[in-house]
Amino acid sequence: MFPVNAWTVFLAALITAVATGLGALPFLFVGQLHRRWLGLANAAAAGLMLAASHALIAEGTGYSPLRTLVGILLGLLFVVLSSHFLDHVDHEEVGTLSGVDARKALLIVGVMTAHSFAEGVGVGVGFGDTRELGLFLTAAIAVHNIPEGLAISLVLVPRGVPVWRAALWSIFSSLPQPIMAVPAFLFVLFFKPFLPVGLGLAGGAMIWMVFAEVIPDAMEESSGEVVGVTVTLAFAAMLAFQFFVLQGV
Image 1 (tube, rainbow, N blue to C red):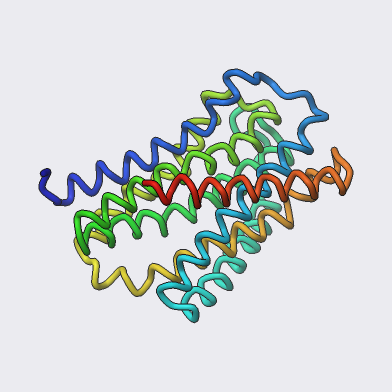
Image 2 (image 1 turned 180 degrees about the vertical axis):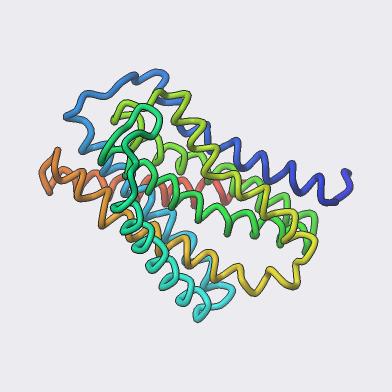
């Protein structure tokens, strides 16, 4: 059996980050979506993000409900301030996007990146406990990151971002995982109390993003009924994925 040290923890967390890029693969077969499908894509992304935030908050409350609640409020504050900041910053171009689309791309990648810090700490804390727990968390987060990469791609690709670039943005959003896993592994007693705060922060930021940005965009292209059905089905699919697939990891 391999030794558990800083390098193996870094490589394990790096695998979880690279797995996020796999979420863009379906677009290699679908191709560029017509504008009328943008509403459905946004609604599906909203459902996936809601389910991910639910999982993060549920995990956080298992450690500390109070610290998770503090994290949710900090996440709300963080993303609202970030949104106001981006409103006053000149971001005419982000890759192939410009204007409002560039702002939305920055927001969703930023929110997903913020939530990756908590998952990186989770991997490091897991290996700091036992090898078995570390391996379980690595596998679970890697599998869990694939639909999160899909959520990012569902927002980016229909707006004209190439599939390969959406995959890179997805991987970029998860790079905090290997960055945070190593210090969390080396200083597990210090990082462990902050884990529920980080999980709550990520969940709170994602919930705001869903209701303030993604669902309103979906409503511009599709009816409320279609958006509601799509969000619910995507949420249910992600929940089923987390339950049935991750339970077997």
